Image (cartoon, rainbow, N blue to C red; front, side):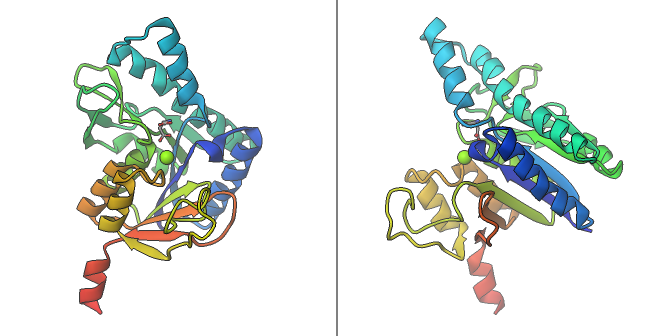
Length: 250
Ligand code: ASP
Ligand code: MG
C-alpha cells in the first residue's frame, strides 16, 4: 500500500464534468489499495475573479482580507469533489489548510509554510477515507487565514508529501508534462521524460507556469520526485527529480 499525494489544478476541476473525471482518477488510485490525499486548486479563473471583485471595492486591499477571500476558491473545489466522491460510493472528507495542520508566516498573499502537522490527515486516512485538502492556504500564528502566492497549490502538495512521507507525488495539469517551451505557444516544443530540480526551478523562475517555484525548492530540499502529468490524457508525464544523485548511483 502506497501513500499518494495527487494535486489537480484549476482547469482539472473547472466544472462538474471535470470534477467527475478527476474523481474517477482518484477512485482508481484508491481502488489500487493506496491511501490517497488530494490537493485541489480553485476552479479555473475563480481566484482571478475574486481578486477583481476585491479590487473593484478596494483598490488598496489589506492582505489579511484578501487572503480571507481568496482561500474560499479552494474550499469550493474540495467540498464539491468530496461530495462527488461520496456519490460514487467512496468515503471522503475535505479539509481546509488550517484543518490539515498547515502553519505559515503572516506574510499575507505570499505566506511561507513554516510547519505541517499532518495528524488530522493521518487520522482520516486510517479510517479509510480519501482526504481532500485545500491548496494554496494555511493559517498564521494568530489564526488568520493566509495564502501562499499565486500557483501555491503545488507547494501545498509537496509540503504534504514531505510531512506524510508519501511514496508518490503527482501534479495533474492541462498539459502532458514539462516541455522544452510552452506547448500552447510553440508547436515545436517537445515533452521531457525527466528534468532536474535545478532546470525546473530555472524554468519556473523564468515564467514557465508549470510548477510554482517554491514547490520545486521544497521538493529539492526533501528529495521528493514529482510527476507532472495531464488530467486530460492518461499518459506518463515528466518526472522532476534529483538527476545528479541518479547519475552517481549508476
Ligand atoms: N488558486 C490559486 C491561483 O490561482 C492557487 C493555485 O491555483 O495553485 O493562483
Ligand atoms: Mg498552477
